[in-house]
Image (cartoon, rainbow, N blue to C red; front, side, top):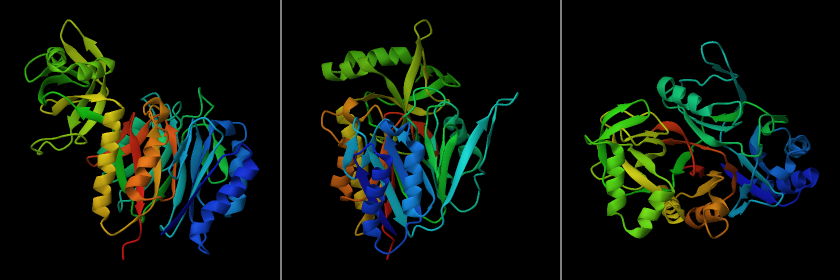
Length: 388
């Protein structure tokens, strides 16, 4: 496959489209693109339709998805405050099926419509969702249970502040609700998810729980375990714990000594001082192994660096052709002291490949073979070069 990318810093939709398509097509040579991904900064909120129409005219109506976002990434750069358009063009990745989805509320709860996830051969689904009208976490839970093997990567649009303000791109159209996506049944895609946390203290087994509430860890209230941990930690670690507590659920219960990256990380969303129980941002089960986590810039850097180095080793002599980066809007300059952290680290580890991405209000990516909605995460869809 061939991939090209472009990052253009201008607020003019026509100029942005011409320059972006022109630059992104150069690496493709005479091969026409068969898929496009387009992300634009919030400066294009009012001109989204003009931008998408101009890109469609320049590319010849290829399948396209994307959105307006708080900020965008292109190549090794992340642009958080300037007007910017990031375009990614690919050729030779097989058939592409773009789609739109909606969530309709019903007396019994609700139903998803517009696209049917097939239980056929495994493939990758890329999705960009509206945070106000599309409960993507419910969809992922349904897929995990009923459509095993369906992998979903993408992010929640961050460009709108209230219902009706999201701008999702689908081919030549702009939508303000639901979700847009692309199914790539034959493309080889490596999903990389760096959750940016590291474990502290000891692992425990959940011995009493109900839904997302944990009443006992190793036979004792979790708040007691947490207080013991806080007392034992050095000053710097204690400060991180005081800023926010996270709980990691071990992905592989057969792993002897799970470490950073071996957990599905969820926030502690509530506590009960009387019972000592804690509530976490996902359902848990008795018998699961868990460990408290902390999050900071160093942990996030370490986690992403380790994830990318592991992928580089797995590729061996193969190279990455391109990547799509879905990074949390709580990362970037809000977390790291240096600019372009996630995109820059990706370029250092895997080379200066074509990359497009955006700062998300939630990131989609599989962990342990299951699809999840994450926060503070860098989720990367990596496209290797075609195997010889």
